[in-house]
Amino acid sequence: MNRTIRSLKPYPMEELNRIKAELKDKGIKIYDFGTGDPKEPTDPKIRQALIDAVPEVSQYPSVAGRKELREAVSRWFLNRFGVKLDPDSQIIPSNGSKEAIFHFPLVFIDTDIPEKNKVIFGTPAYPVYERGTLYAGGVPVPVPLREEDGFLLRLDKLDKSLLEETKIVWINYPHNPTGATAPRSYFEEVYGICRDYGIILCSDECYTEIYYGEKPLSALQTGIEGVVVFHSLSKRSGLTGYRTGFIAGDPNLIKEYRKGRASFGVATPDFIQKAAEVAWSDEEHVEERRKIFNEKRKIFIEFFDRIGLKYLYPEATFYFWIKAPDGMTGEEYAKHLLKYGIVVSPGVNFCSGIEILENRCSSEYFRIALVPTVEECREAVSVWEKAHREL
Image 1 (cartoon, rainbow, N blue to C red):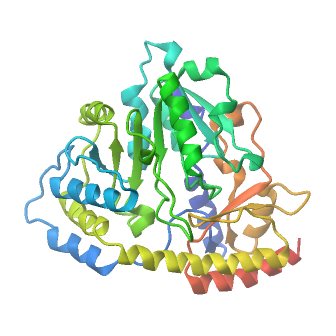
Image 2: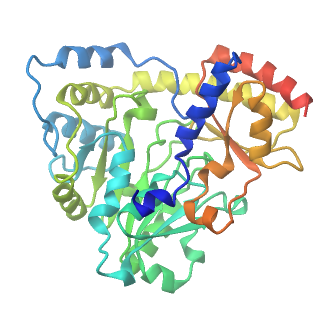
Image 3: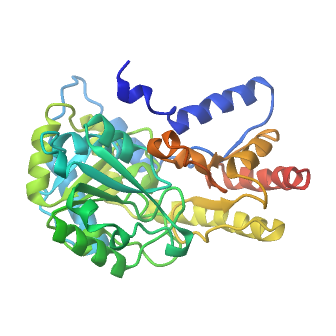
């Protein structure tokens, strides 16, 4: 087996699937707040667009994808963020964001230049930033995110020598798993530091459309040069199974990524692209999804306040980042909840592989994803309250 693969712990979502299967075999009703895959139905007009576009003869999609889709994305980005993107030179459709994030370092990490091969990201984190770096032969540099910093990745606190050796910085706001958001001043500061040190700024923006107040920002609102953003319809439109998104930004970086992408991937099938075009062109279904997530959010804000669990107040995403009761780790509390069929993600699931290997992986936090229906959330709260009393 590849040495890199051997060094990694099992992908967290795969481990959750195993645990859920065991609970099911025991006949325990499962309330799954683990994997970020909400149950709300995909909007009918999006599904119909896909059905109508299924061809009689199937052919390979191109790397560039359908021009109509790129134009729809360009219009959406202008309307949403006020940034005009050229659909031909600044946008590439992707199979969701995961594969695009994973593949990005393969194109831009030059293993022949070891003095510029580091990739910085904050932890806790989406595991793919580190894994894509490792497979590309780069050096991952996990930086712990602090509650006192609002879980923001503070490049200004890092050594200049490290920044000089860094090729890519990953930021992710609104943030998975904490739900933290970032102000405009933060984006401006990070952009300036990356420009000063010749670092590519990669911004994972998959959660910008799940918010409950002020609209989250895009890194491209600060600047284009040296910046690439990653978007997806998985969370915005509930198309997790469709695998459709895009990357956009600096035309020179997009050009290089497109050349590299021809070796390992293409756009999604044309019929999925047609459905994606409809999704990016409509806001009504997104507004409805936000209302549903907000209803779930209110259920858990009231519940956690009532039983005394501390959490980061979620301004965006459909996640809660919660502290376990005093004297317990997030993992211990998660194991206790499992006995009652409540599935959550311990904070250690979002540690980097380096932290695990160096025995630096521990967390008092755990994450819940507002995946079940509103009614299931209400039902789960009563079960959870019983579990909490019986600690």
